[in-house]
Image (cartoon, rainbow, N blue to C red):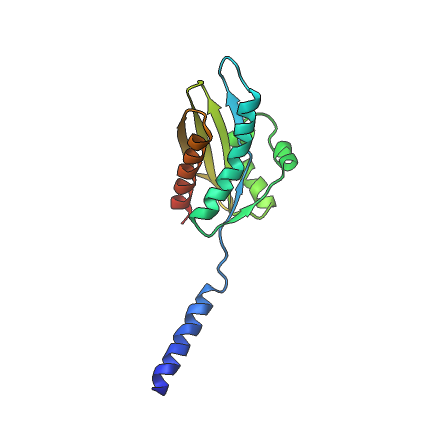
Length: 165
């Protein structure tokens, strides 16, 4: 009985020590840029909708797994983003921004709206350490209701989780 108890204690210590040094992946989610090419672009409703996507994505990512969300303020993002889509096109520069904030991954996205009937969440997942594009996702949103946006964001978060885990 004493030997069995010693084994249990040893295994418990090994399990606990195996988690020491583990840190959750650190993910920075930049604000989505709106690329509205409809005949009535950048309506107040669409600007509000687009502004809501990053916080929704942060929440959905934390619900899919053990991740630490890194916040990069809007001023730092705007400073690094020389012009519309700059960070979206240049993965190495986005990675350097993420590195400044201690992120392991940075997600740079656009909300592309070619029609009043549908739009796309276009996201680049960039590995900060290698400064390379790990994945590019395009999620179609049919409609502009809150439920549609949340469903699309959840789908994007699941894809990101599958990539990073």
